[in-house]
Length: 17
Image (cartoon, rainbow, N blue to C red):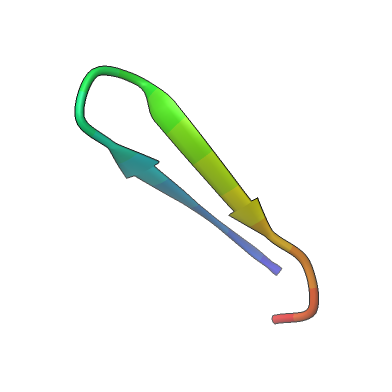
């Protein structure tokens, strides 16, 4: 489970790790 932020606040949340 982690969150990655790209550019101006675009958020990608990946569940699993």
